Amino acid sequence: MRNWVFWAVLVAVGLVFVVVSRLTIANDYFYFAGYVVLEYVVLATAWNILGGYTGYTNFGTGAFFAAGAYSSVVLFKLPPLLLATFNWTIPAMPLPVMIAVGGVVSGLIGLGTGYLTLRLRGVFFAIATLALSIVLQTLIVNWAFVGGSRGVFVIRPALAPLGGGYIQYLFSLMTLLAVIAVGIARSIERSRLGLGFHAIRDDELAAEAAGVPTLRLKLISTTISGALMGMAGAPLPYFVTYLTPTASFDLAYAVNSVAMPVIGGMTSWIGPVIGAILLGTLQQLGTVGFFLDLKLDPTFNLLIVGLLLIGFVIIAPNGIVGLVQSWLRRGEA
Amino acid sequence: MVQLDLLINAIVAGILLGGFYAAVSVGVTIAFGMLDIANIAAPAFILLGSYVAYIVNFYFGIDPILTGIVAMPLFFLLGMAAYRLYYFAFERRGEQAIQGLAFFFGLLFVGEVSLVLIFGVDYRFVTAAYIGPSFHIGIVEVPLRMLVPCVFSLIMVGLVQLYLSRSFIGRAILAVSQDPGALQLMAASPTRIKQIAFGISIATCSVAGSFLIIIQEVEPSIGRDYIGRIFAICVLGGMTSMPGMLIAAVLLGVVENITSTFYGPSWSPAVAFGLLLVTLAVRPSGLLGRQ
Image (cartoon, rainbow over all chains, first blue to last red; front, side, top):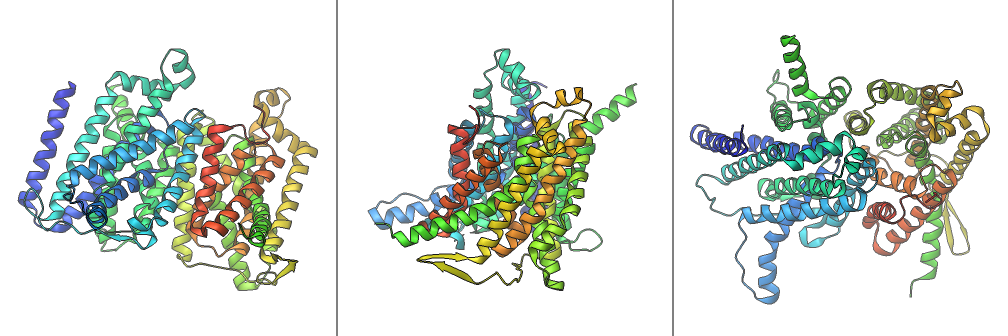
């Protein structure tokens, strides 16, 4: 499929999905659950741009995600502060602007971490990202302006754009973000950039020797990946309305965004999407007691995600997509 | 002017803390530095050690350090089993990098969540005669709950260093870290040596875990705070050298303690990471490493 055709189809699918669900489903819970699943589609796709395409593991999804969320908190608190201290009046910022800013902030964090660690072996980047969440959380806990460790209340605007309730608006925005993330992932996959990423993943030394600018490509990869994670996090304060550091830096984000691409399959854009929809939906259903009327503890859900991650990584390293591909190939032979 | 007595106390407490950090990091120095296995699940094994010490102390009132030492063979077997799994799933296929990391990350997470499901998120602690009292040397206060783990930690690090440099298998482990191919030519199996070494690395987690629950109250998620510390110490210490690791551990302990004394304890988790980033950016070979 040509790239612009893919984009057109993707946008159409997103549009139809939003319009149809808003016309037919009135239950607010659907939009809450759908928002979370779509959020994971963005996070898993973003993770896979660095992890799957370039071959560098990022364990700090929570950090990038929370950086996006807290940049929204800053933007939310800025107008009242400016009014009180300097008597400047600036209008409250619309959510799409906050999403863009969140993307820039997290993209810069990705660039900085990458610049400091990616010149060494990939393991150091992974370890640095793991510790990055701890440090960012320390900074947020000590920053009273954004609520510190007590957390912060964010008030939703009274009127939601696009009609309907505010949760429907957030749901539509997250669908748009998912469309953008998947579109970017697939465009990268088919471009010169993607070829460079794949060369680094397969053999970085050989790629470097063949003239691939590895450091620059790795930095592009971390920046794009981080920016998308920040964009996914930016609407979070409006989704939960009460944001705490522990909730926004939750290790569940990191685990899920690693597990989803690994379980779905890391080699193409469809893998993380499958993984996110599957695992995300199962976790939502498990929490509300869909299976055997058994209300599963969210912690227990996460245990299953962790075990699935270990199981897939050992038995089926290419995920569901890989399993299907080898099954199809066996059919041909 | 900085208050001198505060500063001296912070330095002494930092040195004691650093001794304990050495015990926590010795396992990863063996696994990551020598075997090239990035065992980011080490904190989960350390916490397991803490909870074993907690259970035995709670039900039988037995000293946590004694429990930690007695449980070492079990942890050794656990480590050997973990390495076997890792070897068959990743090393043999030559796919250590991303899948191996994801494997250990999964292990870390599953360990933490299992502890949450079994013990809940309450803080647990142990009781022993040396927890609580402290003695004074002039203006310096030395809490026994810091001193005892520090002393035992130094003994453990010393024994590990002695084992690595004197015993046959210990020297084989060092040889594996330098050139596994050459070891094969000497008719020794690198896999078997690495399995023993990884077993030792996990066995130290048992004792380190018992130190941890003496020094502070433990709940399942505190393991994460130690990832940054452990790897910062390991990298700063030059990856393979035990003396380097010891110096790095004491350095981190002192800097962390000074930070929390003068700027508040809520800042101290960031110190290790800052140190790690600076080391990686400025001197990736560590303090005593070769350039």
